[in-house]
Length: 164
Ligand SMILES: [Zn+2]
Image 1: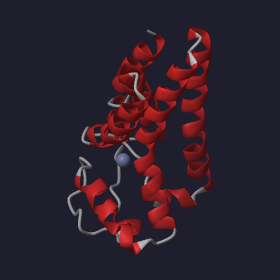
Image 2: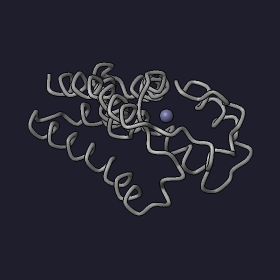
Image 3: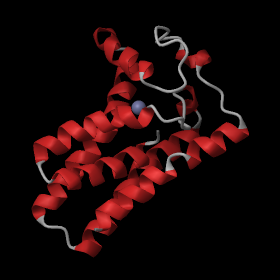
Image 4: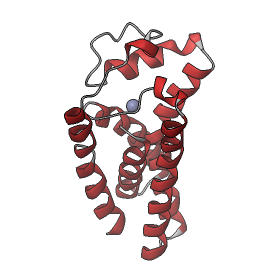
């Protein structure tokens, strides 16, 4: 899923745990649970297009701005800021790790890519790790629509928990 969805959902789960260590662990695990749900993602080959790169950079910023706004409106305590941030950050972290492994070609960490792809709902060839550039899933218009739509419930439920 996109980073916004992961960050907001992880922050909400972090808030629910109320504990920094649990926020880290559950946030990280939640990432892979969310990836099991059919969804749309920007692929790594699209990062080469400036438009998509801007979108990818905007994505975490938007989530973070929303999170800050909710926290300020609700007057989060220091401990709530901490657990929500840790939950959100660790829920988004696997995509960041994936990004660095690919960009810097970190072969010893290939097991992580294999795992990440294996739990991804769409990947038929989890072993074919480095072939992604040409091999990535192509989304149809309908697939993109539903792939974005399916992320919205996570975000709405998460916003509800962040507000209450
Ligand atoms: Zn992921």
